Length: 343
Image (cartoon, rainbow, N blue to C red; front, side):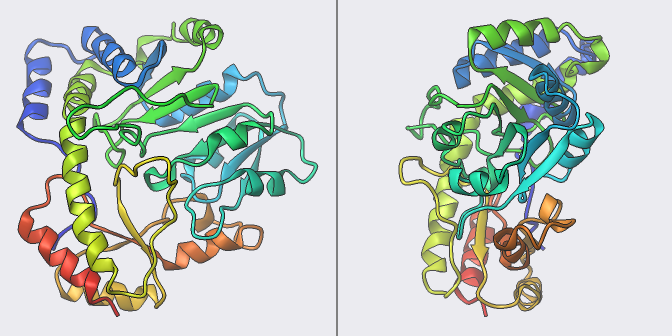
């Protein structure tokens, strides 16, 4: 059975982790600092700290915005379920926002609709399935933004040979998760970036946390290799996605609408089904290919269907097919054939 997800961990990542273990570099230390420097150079940020989880990163980013207790924080219905837990633990009020038709992300229009007179002090913009929303337009609303680019890393690369510095983000703070299913993985952890120098100083002061908050060197060693191999892996993802896209043209199922000014990083290959998900899952499993509900584990999977009808519909109809650099040519060919013959 070809699985939907598999972290891109090769011999180089294993060797890096083993070296850290042999040198007794397990807790936060030099390798974690080297990861921070590597990430800043690759992504174009001046200020960054590493943490043990995206949960910690989001909680810290919200705290640094100094939001009063009870005030609202907008989140996409298709963002991770843990967002709600973090917001509620900080005694803030989650305001769940729908997405646009055929889109995976929130927009200025859906945010304005969700606001509807509510006292909102922050917007968390999740780059769902690696798609980057029109954050510049959302920023025009005038509410501070936290961006989560855990799945969109590499979107701003304009070459298959090198990964260039990214275009400016609009968030006050930017989170890059390093979990198992994120674009880059360290086996766990997250990076938290600040956009401007003033917020960078705030982040630097906040970064003076006990070592138990920091990313261990063992994980950082793996993440450094992931950054170095990003361009190569992006190229492989693009090649696989091209094969799948050609196959999907023979079906009546739809693709998500991506921004014309940004090349998709091909984090995943989702399709919006015109038929029942149950039938598609049964068909693909019989053929030895695993597919998965694209939005299981998101906020909409728990509730909010009435106020977010578009997201609720996507929960029932959007599926993911296997797409990751370690797929063999045979697996890609097999998956493409199945995509092209979906019921």
